[in-house]
Image 1 (tube, rainbow, N blue to C red):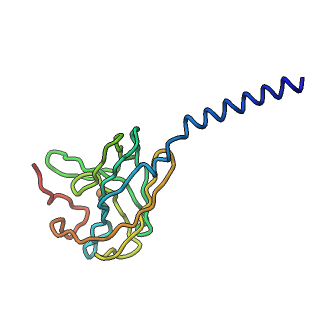
Image 2: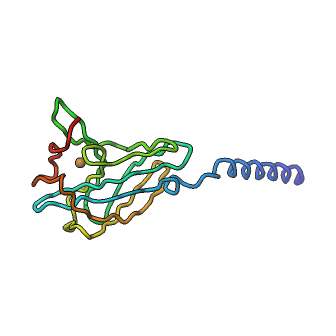
Image 3: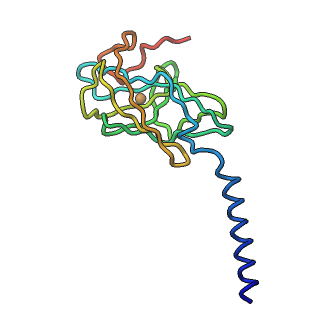
Length: 167
Ligand SMILES: [Cu+2]
């Protein structure tokens, strides 16, 4: 009786170990994402928002979603994209950015970006802010992002992206 029970437990344990080792070989998603060229656009005087741009490289064999971003420099951080409605560029909040398997997603002016709303400090070129990126497996990555002044993205209203070049 005891012997049978022990054998059952033993095989159950073996089964669990092999299940774990086959499904958890990969590191978490945050480790599979490499960030290149991150920056935050310097805030023009009087602005109440700015944006961060970067390239997200996915080194894993599966697509990864960036679900959320937060920062020590802004009260609200949103994932935004641009849409072209009859020639009018508008920003829209999206629920995630997809980063394809073995591929990359570029966040750039006029396209996808991380919106920093209600900054908690003035973001001036030369400073750095922390941005935390959270992926769909719940893992997260913290990066130090330099603030840069980007001349050709000017305009007194930081929400106005209409000056971007069009094809
Ligand atoms: Cu935006």
